[in-house]
Length: 482
Image (cartoon, rainbow, N blue to C red; front, side, top):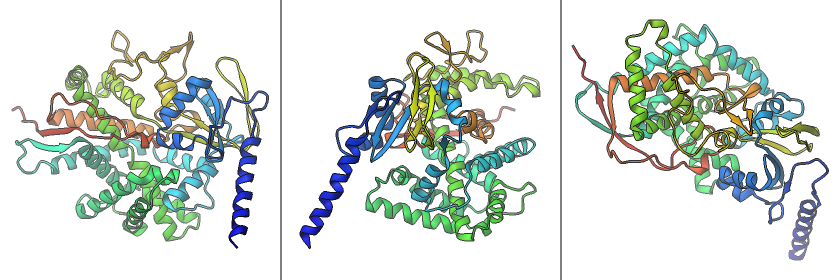
């Protein structure tokens, strides 16, 4: 019996080696780099730190190349001027299959009639005017309620906190109440939702890559199961005048004939999509301001001047806009992935043309290009609060590379058909929370010499990066000037 198993193993291994060595680069295909380990290829490097690995491949091969990753051949395109054309071709580059794969791995969710284009259109429809204005007002009211609640006692005394926890909890709770239509008075339930979500989110990248250890999987599965219970569709409030996003989404799921259990799992997906990035983004935004006094001073001067402007000019904040863009340039790192459904020729800015092979996977990584490209952004690793300002203080929009104007200088919200349909609401939220905190609180670092923590490389590819460390802050309510 043993020798039969040995023969089977040898046969499988031989087949793997045959298929691995069989792949060769054809005419007009991108440079091919299979790595040194059969089948596995570059999987370990790709999973450990995708930004570092793809930077090395870009230096070696240029703006387009194909790598082997755990038996899959992935073509990476890093020429941002051709992103729109690639993403617009939904016939050649399909989003559905890979999205369903990740939904199953991470959320144990199967949506048989899943159509990402239809889903995106539904989100876009909900987050446009006049609904957008009502959502922004609700978000501001919820933020204000939470800030007031945090200072009902000893409001004149300094409070210490972790900046990451402060930002994540504040934005998560405000967003949860705004989009799920929940009541502000159920703090016990929110605390459990928040804590379970944080437990689940810590392991999420590893679940996506199938690199989680057994104990980590058990930990994440426990949190996921509890969140399914807490996010029952029957628990969503129906008291609000405006139908919440979650009510709209549950209605959509019911129209598809999906059962209650599937609805719960889909709601967890929506919770992560809507609340997984706002807190980390606010952490980086406030963190860069607190560790760069010149930036903080410039923003405060701008916010102070708003109090003396006509009401229709109050949202004109070019300095804060530049700080936000610079923050997202440095810390937004989503990986856009598609399945190549048919051989497709693409043309780069250089004029070179390459053929992408059917059956491969396509990846676009805006974090490397355009956001961290030194030919587009001088000293791209540095935070420069005025990078997106002209000398006269107006918004800077023109960036060039090799004498050619770039269509995109940053892509934190995606691009073209991949543009986040709720990006206007997200931008409003990030700007509003910073404005409210800086005008209503005295906020400072406990250690005035503290520097920004490094990023957690495990989070590359999953939206906003998260820190591998923290900043300790202290804050108190500003005294009212009578």
